[in-house]
Image 1: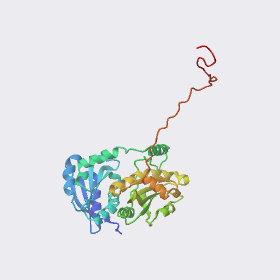
Image 2 (image 1 turned 90 degrees about the vertical axis):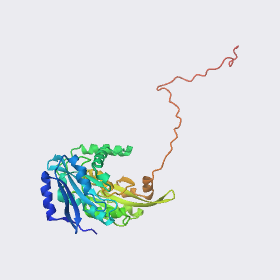
Image 3 (image 1 turned 60 degrees about the vertical axis):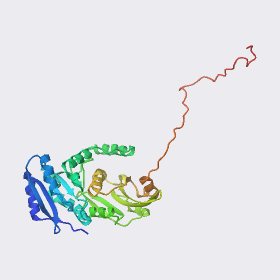
Image 4 (image 1 turned 180 degrees about the vertical axis):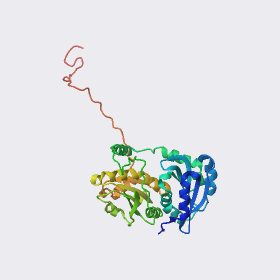
Length: 347
């Protein structure tokens, strides 16, 4: 297991100095099992003019790092910062895992309230100014929704409008995130490497974090037993199966919410945190999720249900001809009209 790494006193002191706005960039690296100051840059020009010339030269092709880049916008706590996680493809796997597991610690030490946005990259193009602008643009564009997802979204939006507050703060559906604890991040990375096949997560409502519950090996037949009957959970399951003659291993994300057995606060928080958790898992930890499922009861998780969710059947509908209905209201008696000569008349 990875140790929980801490910032050196010198780095903490520099963080405090930098937050007043006099520093443009801070590079943080891991050395001797500590977070230390790797480099920094003072202000020169506007944030976008300084960006590429300050950031890109500090990116090593084989060494991950964190970069905190000061923007020119401010919030109630001071200047806003961009948090960059650099994890190049050529760096050792152990280093990638170590930096991924320590990311939440760096943000906590610096102060999460100062961080406006996060950027993850394995190539310099991802981290460049152009890459950051593409990231901002893609985040602002809503993903296409299925009919079922649109219906769920409407229900959730209507719930948000009921003026329910969490710790006296009105949270929006898109803006709430409980960061993953280091042990949870490590478990997800091990599942990505297929060293685990099941990860269960829960929200700590007091600490406002996403915690690891357990990683017990789980077969499909055991999945229903993993679903709590009185509390919500997030699950990641490595679904091993065959499809059309091919052996596949697909990661399935399951959001279990046992209806109104949970409090309103718990339902709202789990619903609001789900999308940000998925962003962290798919973008920061680079775990590909084949299917996202929402259930109320573990009884739904049969082998047939999972297979149909991951590989939905393609139905071909043939439009049947429907005889049009006649005009509404009473109609007169049917009349039999006979042709000439049928009653013996002369033709």
